[in-house]
Image 1 (cartoon, rainbow, N blue to C red):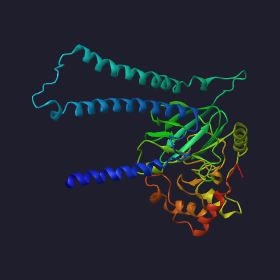
Image 2: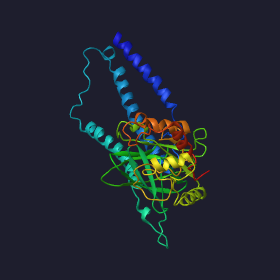
Image 3: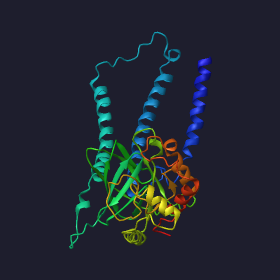
Image 4: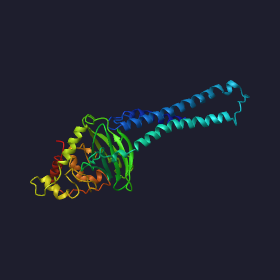
Length: 357
C-alpha cells in the first residue's frame, strides 16, 4: 500500500514538473521555437519521429487491451486453449517486416537532413575577385569563454556572436583546452569542439534578435559538453542583425584598429587597465584568434559580465574580486589587492568600450 502511495506521489511530482518545465520554452532559448531553417528542419524530424513512436505505442496498446479483455479466463473459461501460433511464418514475417519499414521511414529523412547539414562545401566558394562569398566564423571554446574570429573581415570578439539573418553562416569549431560543445538551442543542433580537429557546420538565422527576452535582444548560446566545474556558466549570446546592420557592425569593429589603453592616460580606469589587464585583454576588435583572454572591444555592448552576471559596473567589480568563486576553474587572476577606487574606475572604463553606442 505504501509503495503504491509513493509511486503515485512520484507520478504526481513528475506531472507537475512536466507542466512547469514545459513553460520554460522561450524564443531566445527553446529548441521548440526554432528561429532558423536548420532548427525548423531538426524540429520537424523530431516531431516526425515522435509521431512514429506514438503510432507504435498506440497500436501495441490497442492490441494488448483487446487481448486482455477479449481473452480473459472469465470470458473464455478455465479450460480454453488459445490458438497455437508458434512457428507461424506469416506472423514472423509481419513482425519482422513492419519494424524494418518503420526504420526505413525514419532513416530516409534523417539521413537526408544529416548529410545536408554536413555539406559545407560552399564555405570555400569565392567570387570573381577571389573573395569568399559565405560568412565564416572561427569559434574557439576555452575555459570558460568563447572566442569568435571573422577571418575574412579581420576582426575578433568574445562572448557575443554577431551574425546576419537570411543566409548561411559557416562555423569552424575547435577547442583550446578540453572538449566543449557549441550550441545555440533556438537556432540549431549542437556540435562538439575538439582540441585535435576542426568540426564544421552551418546555421541559418531567420529572425532578428532585437526584440527577444524583454529587451535583451540576444539568443542564448550554451556549452553542451560537461567540460569542468563551471560548465553550466559557459554561456555566450548571439545578436542577429539584417545584412545592412551587420555590415555596419563589421565596419565599426574594423574602425577600432590600433585602439589601445594607455598607461599614461589621465583616466584612472584606462591607466589601471593598461597596467594590469592589457597583457591578456585586447581593446581593439581587429585581430586574429588565439588570445589568452576575451577581447574586450565590445564590452560595453554586451548583455552579461563573464557570460552570466548582470551587465553593471558593480558586477564587474564583483567579478574582478571574486572570479575564482563565481566561475571556479577559470584562468582569470584575482584583483583583490587593488583599491576600491581602482576597481570602480576599471569597471567604468570597460563600460565605455563599445562599437555600437
